[in-house]
Image 1 (cartoon, helix red, strand yellow):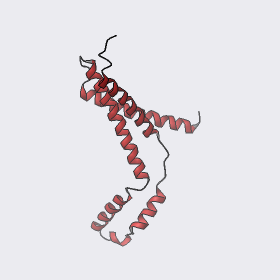
Image 2: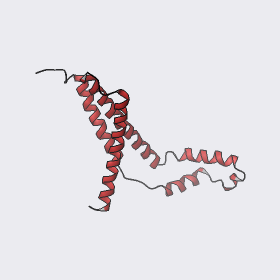
Image 3: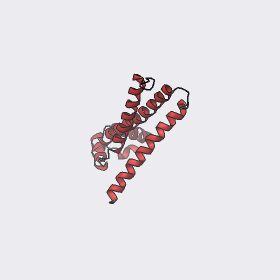
Image 4: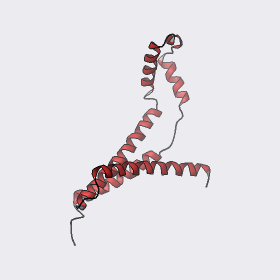
Length: 141
């Protein structure tokens, strides 16, 4: 295998393990081993939906951060800190200069492994939700 493929596979494995850990924590908190199969399906639905949504939100925040939407917050915090540092305002730069410098420093990442893993877990959670809502598990042939 090429190094690029190994690195990509490693990223997907890490994302999958993080999502599985989040799902396991939700299952552990909710108490999976109950007498009713309907409650267990509901818990599985909650666990997979929560882990999928959390990964999707994290992927969204990474996209927003990569596009430079959070640069303003960093500039404000830097300016506030410089107010309290003696001689800190000596090296003050304007927002346009700060934004230009930060956009040059940031690298665009095209990793979509977090997004795809989140969509996968959310899809599994939606399947469990449909099963739970339609009561497939209680119908007998």
